[in-house]
Amino acid sequence: MEMTFRWYGEDDPVTLENIRQIPTMRGIVSAIYDVPVGEVWPRERIKQLKETIEANGLKLSVIESVPVHEDIKLGRDTRDQLIDNYIETIRNLAAEGVNVVCYNFMPVFDWTRTDLAYRYEDGSTALIFDEEVSKKMDPINGELSLPGWDSSYTKESMKAVMDAYADVDEEKLWENLAYFIKRVMPVAEEVKVKMAIHPDDPPYSIFGLPRIITNKAAVERFLDLYDSEYNGVTLCVGSYASTPDNDPIEILRYALERQRVNFMHARNIKLEEGKSFKETAHPSEYGSIDMFEVVKALHDHNWNGPIRPDHGRMIWGETGRPGYGLYDRALGATYLSGLWEAIDKIKG
Image (tube, rainbow, N blue to C red; front, side, top):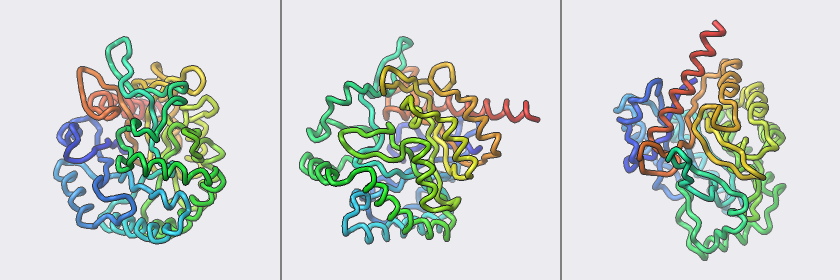
């Protein structure tokens, strides 16, 4: 298990110097954030990112993410050129020694929450999703924005892309994903870059948009699209656990048995009424996920891939990018490493 940490670049309030001081920390998960979606990432920019990270005593372990252009998800005529560009980016990453790429196939929006600073009784704040609040949210009015989302949409362009999805149901989205996978994966295999699709977050339809990477059956269907270790998943237990219909440990063990867990996100959440949930501290006692069983499943399968503590609370007066502060994620990293060490020693 290789412990890693998400870093948003030079303007991230959490510095590489901060990160390298976290016990057991080995790698960085990052990306190039100013190249427009659909364009090729220049090899020189990848090299600069890698050298910056290595100069701080860490390694560039995972790119999260190389975004997939909406035209690919929509199956438009422009997709072939956009996929060619995507493939060229993968080749450039491989040439600079990057061998894991996380991405998603969520229409329009990345992860979605209804409150970025829900206050717990202890004074910490966290991300939450309230199902009833989400039903009243209107993305077209321009008031909906979260860290990590594509902020280039105007009200007009947002309406246009939302309207375009009126003709794309789940089966059509699966068809478009299969087209993308069958073009990209032979190259990923050739250059030995492990692709890792992230589940939809939350794992069900929002704002009337289709979502397909949502449960165990979806993982099985996805892995069957292209049977290769390079066509794998980012197993985000927090995302899968965000609906009571899923057993995240079962999904994890299934993907591990197929040797297709190429990246791990470890985040705990507390299920509330319906499909609502609150993000919590990482230890099992605070959420609905048994994090011991998560780490044990990884250890049982001798898994040695990259893992990162996902979304943390804001604690000790810290301010910054919601979900991506230093302190709580650092606590999460050391907690996960402690579980691994304990399991390793018990099993002898």
